[in-house]
Length: 232
Image (cartoon, rainbow, N blue to C red; front, side, top):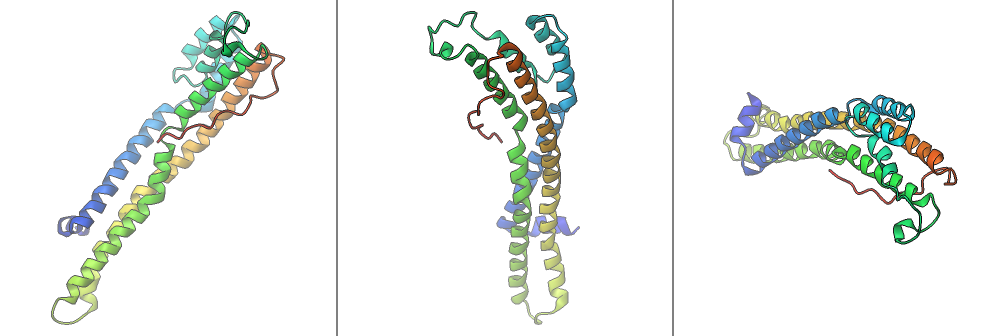
C-alpha cells in the first residue's frame, strides 16, 4: 500500500530512483542465477577432470577424457594448451625464442588467464550493485522526505506529527528497497568469490603440474601474468 502510493505519487526523480533500483535488482538476480549455473561443479569438478587427465595414456586421450569430465571447460583449456605447442623449437618465429619450455609456459599462462577472466565475469557487477544500491535508495528517501516536508509546509493548520508521519514513512520505503537490492548481491558476491578462489587454486595447481611434467627445466611456478582486465 505504502510502496504503491509512493510510486504513483512520486515526482520524476522519485520514479527514476525506483526504476533504477528495479533495473539493478533485475541485473543482480540475472547475474546471480547465471553464475550459479556457470560455476556448478566448482573445485570438485575440476579435480575430477584433472584426475581423468592424469589417468590417460597420452595427452590426446587425456584431453578427450577431460572434455567429457569438464563440461564447463574450466580445466580443459590448460590441457589443450599442450596441443598448441610447435613440433620443433627452431627459433624461426618470436613465439619459439627463449628456452625450450618458454612456449609451454606462455600457453599455460594464457589459457589460465582466459579461464579466470570467464570465472570472474559478473563479479564486478554484483559488487557495484551491492555497494551502491543502499545509497540509491537513500537518495530516494531524502528526496521523498524533502518533497513531503515542502508539501506539508504549504498546507494550512501548522506542522503536526500526524501530517509528517505518513509521507516520511512512505519515503523511507526507498531505503528498504535499496537494502533489498543490495543484500542478495553482496551475499552472492561473497559466495561466488569463495568458490572462484577454490577453483583458481585447483587450476593453478594443475598448470604447475603440467609445467613440471612437460617442461621439467621450467621454473617452479608460472611467471607473473599480464594484468587481467575486469569484466562486468
